[in-house]
Each structure stands twice: as C-alpha cells, then as structure tokens.
Image 1 (cartoon, rainbow, N blue to C red):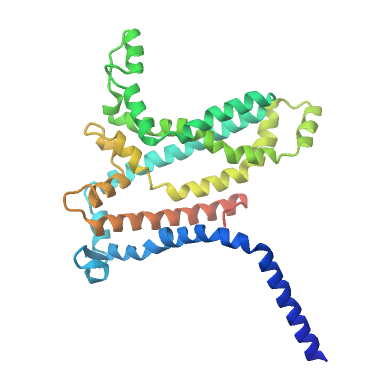
Image 2: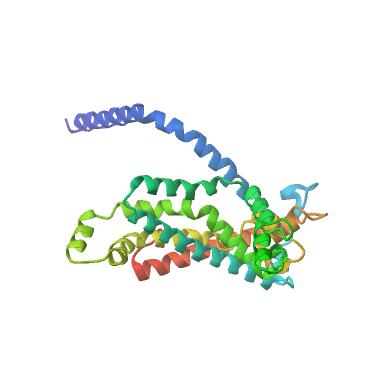
Length: 316
C-alpha cells in the first residue's frame, strides 16, 4: 500500500508539473531569442579572450598562434604613457559618475515635489528626449556650437567684448565638455530609478511631517532622501563596473591633436592599437580589454562589500 501511495503521489506530482509547463510554456518560448542572443554575443565570444595570451596571427588562427603568456599585459603596464591613460580615464569616469548621479538625484527630487502633474510630465519628456539623440549628432552639434567662427557661444563671447576660442582644442576643457554633454543627454533618463524609489514613500510620512510643521526642504531631507538611499547605493555599485570604460565612440569624435593629452583614455588607446593601426595588434588590444574587465569586476566586488558593511545595502 505504501508503494502504491508513493507511486500515486509521484504520478500526481508529474501531472502537476506537466500541467504547469503546458500552462506557461509560451513564456519559455519567448525567452529563447533572449537566451540565444546572450549565448551567441555574450558567452560565445569569451573563448576569444585566450588571444590575450597568444601572439595572434590571422593565418594561424586562435589555437594555432604562439603562446606568449603575460607578454602583452606586461607591455601595457610598462607602456610609457600608461599612467597618463589611467589618470585620464579615472578622472573622466569618476567625474561623470559623481556629477551625473548628483544631477539625476536633484532632478528626481525636484520633479517629485511638483504638484502639477501636467507640468511634471512635460519636464520629464523634455529631459528624457536627449537620451535618444545619437552620440554622433550630439558631438557634431557640440562642435558646431563651440566653433570659434560660427558657433553660438563664440558669437555671444564676442558680443560681450571677448575673443573667440575653440574650446575643443583646449585640453583642460575636454573632461568638462565630455561630462556635462553626457549629463545633458542622460540626466533625465537616470532619474527613472530615483523617481520609482520616491513613489514608494508612504504619503502618511509626509502628512505627519506637515502636521509637525516640517518644511518642504526638511521633508525632502528626512523622508525622500533616506527612501532612495538603497537605490543610490545600487546605482553606485553598478556604475563601478564602467569606471574604466570611458565611451570610445564619443571620445574619438571629440579628440584632436590639440586635446589628446587629456582625451586619450584606455578605450581610445585600445581602438588605436587593435583596429585603427596600420598593422593591428589584436593580442595587445585584447589583453588591455581583459585587464580592464577584470579590474572593473574587482571594483564592483570591492564597492559592493564596502556598501554592504556600511549601509547594509548591496547588489549581491
């Protein structure tokens, strides 16, 4: 009897699992394209990382090329301009992360304080739209705007009695132009997470604070900001993964011979060595990219551990 009951229970469990699968199998079918994309374009190319440890020759192929160990990693670390590349990359990345998060948080808090929903939606739409502008179009507009002869800024400076100057040729101005043009393009999009966090705030907290005589600024400081601290921490941890990855496309469009001392970063150096060079150094560029990825992973793990210890909020 026990065996029969066990078999009956087993058969009932199988029927239940089969029923559940038949009920939701369309969802699994919908996952197939996403899984295929990840396997083909995220995990599939990972075998190519072995190129970083070889003297890759196209004629010999990946596995037929000579093994050179850590040769390319050592070459990059001992490169005469290595520290300048790291300094430029970190300067722009940290600047962009800190300034971008501050602007997005302030913008989200300001929109959350708006009582008129129509006005808030209009402002949200206006701040979201630049995110969909192509980087090429945005940089082209920026160059045109800063043109020393025909640019709007130059005309304005000349009208005040000043002399025109091409800021795209000023090395010290490139980090600021890169960061603040990026903030203009992505600040509105970055507010989405923070606005979502603010919508979870219990309205009764604000009502109680109003009864106690709290001002709007005090309510933002003691209610709204603490509510989005977990979101800020998670966003900070995720941004650490790209701290060594300044966008090569945008920086290459902004780069010229006059500003190269500050615009040459790791990603543009990889492009110049691995693609743009007359004789591309595929192994060298792959080694730099692999080192960049490993350091970014270590940054994520480190910052995650620090945030977990200090604030008890972490990504994993």
